[in-house]
Length: 151
Image (cartoon, rainbow, N blue to C red; front, side, top):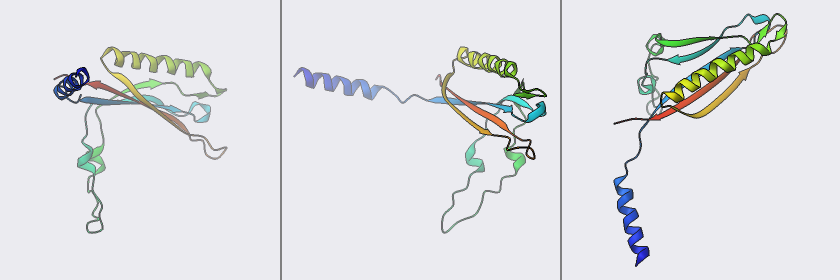
């Protein structure tokens, strides 16, 4: 009998709990790994929202028409840009620059946490310099935050 009462109580409690709604914020760091310090490094955060559905098409056998959105419709001109230092300078890898970038990124993460955001995921990738004739490369990290929407 006690088990039945517990199960019924949990069902009623569970029925009263609503699914929590979250909002998401993405912060991206782009750090140059171009030799000689020629690249640009930034911490980027959009200040506007975009609805992906406006730029999406569903492909089927019967209908393979593409979304006709213009790049200018997708482009964001209202964003926060924080300067970071490049990984390389004329002398090679600059470890002080990496430490400085870490401090700036930590500051941004701490500000987001203080503003009620939770760091949910971190994703990193690198496109490295492939030798003498390339001269290109970036290290990109996406910090994905979430927070409960207050109703």
